[in-house]
Image (cartoon, rainbow, N blue to C red; front, side, top):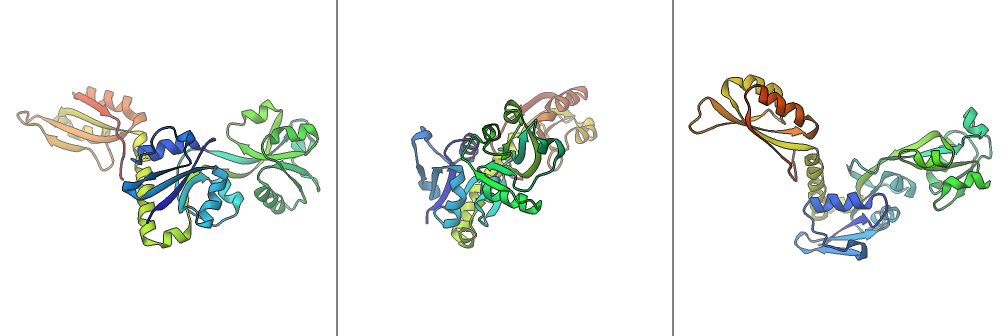
Length: 289
């Protein structure tokens, strides 16, 4: 039984999605920009490259079993999908914003009938309903930032990452509708199938292991045996450092541990101070915790 997965074919989520899947050991081949799908026969997996905004619909309809897309797109589509893994990239927020000179921005009060341009009409309408405001939602496809300046709308509801685009267009944030990032989603129907669930879980856990390894380093060093209490303070590792005897050197042991990359400078220098030698740090592909 072939399990089907969807990946964004372009845009803000594409590059990192392809990178994670490839690092997980799933061969995608070359020239992906011209491919609509890739079969991975040894895994009985087929990967489809489609628009990120279409992936929630494809999962919900059963066209694919699982996929990687933004939380904002799933929420806007309105389907009940199972979130399997947050991917720690594509972070953004759907925000309400308006022109810097707007009275609405200055006083923070939405008047009845306020016009809001957005490509997220479902989420935006729900936000204003929760605020108790009768808003006029103006659906647009892209370039929402220009709409208030053209007089098409009073405000916009759009994705914001750094806020640079808003500032360039003399817009200011008023409130956040929702925060979002890329995640892996699956349908309940796919997960109810034991064969598909096993295949999906294997892919998800492989991606999780890749993410766990990316900001870690495997460290090895020879240290004086008498300094082991200090080594345990310096190298807590996942469950403490691994300690190995060195043949012919009873007073020296080899220690090994997985450390956060950001701690490398501190750890290496701390080991040197207690007599550590032959210190080696190595990047690795996966870490199953």
